[in-house]
Length: 519
Image (tube, one colour):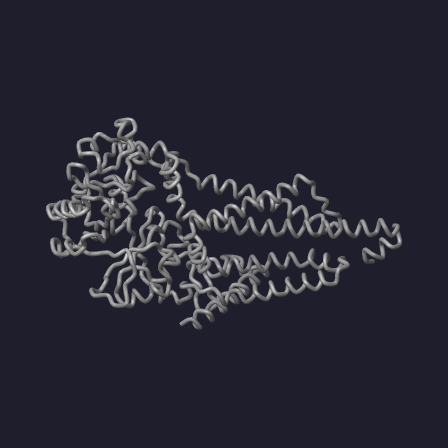
């Protein structure tokens, strides 16, 4: 019998109204709990996506606070705590619903749920204000994860149907009933049509897959050796990278050397050797002073990447002995390894920048390295460079213009700034596209399917081992495979696996329709 019939037979009218109001109150908190869970789940997804770029955030915090910490661990631990708490509460709430018991959340849990919602909202707000480009990263990630997220969303909304139906059945307000029913139906319709709004470059026959992108070592192999050192260059060679990407500064006495930061505090022991000069620009030191600095011990002490813990004793000893290399030393090592070198010349706003360009060109020409192995990134005085070293390859940090006077052959851009359609077009026009910084296999897979020429990476040892994208959503929906096994190995014979494969086929088909419409 219905709640009203049961209450009418067993309790006074005033008590009945109180019980029904309490039931509606419990259902409201159940819906709030479900929304907080979804909100936190979305943040977990974003947290996983931004891990690709989190080393940049660590470096930013160090420059601002002079404190080094792998903040990605803080992010993941905090997110795991929030999602675990809301998940446990939601499971308990569902169990109570199934047993016909009231929720009766304690006030402590109500406060904690509200705080969870506020913390996640603050995290999203901070992301939008200080790190807005990560919204683009999330959009790119949907090209890889969209079909799988869609299945999870459909399952979650299906689970929500029972408690929602119970609430609609027992509530007295007809307007509230109709509103909730319309909202739920609209959400389900939108959810089933969502794949039409997702495009994926990984929808293709396997034979159409472009060649694997070449690897560019970001400051060498910074997960395996101190960045911008000769050891990092050698480790990059072991990772089969084709280009060593670095940053060049010029000392006070005119020696170009490898260094990314304008200050030396993050990657050397300058505070111990020259404490009164530690805050000076790197270019304020002469070469003799720079050679007194230790450029490797910080790597072992601060552990900028988790991979530092797995270094062999021999590698640890070698890392501790690293010094700041000159550009000449790096060019000699690159020449011996048949490795190309790409670099920025910093700082661009220096008053003596033209002299920086001249002394850098002089070192390049004296090194004897084939000029086609030198990829020149700086925009300043580019015409002078073309005249003095006509064999150098010029790489532009911008997209081509409509009325380009001289054809661009190489571009170097953040991976968020190039769409899959633009990458394909540049590839058709024989323009080499390098995107940075790509560390996660899912992102590398999407860019591989898009046809990018090369990627700059911190994780060359990981991407080197990838022989195939993580998955291909092939145009024949009966052969969806995560590189290259179909569906879920060993489970497609079961009913649940068959349902999963069916859902994936639908997602692939709708996404394919969208891709064809855009083409």
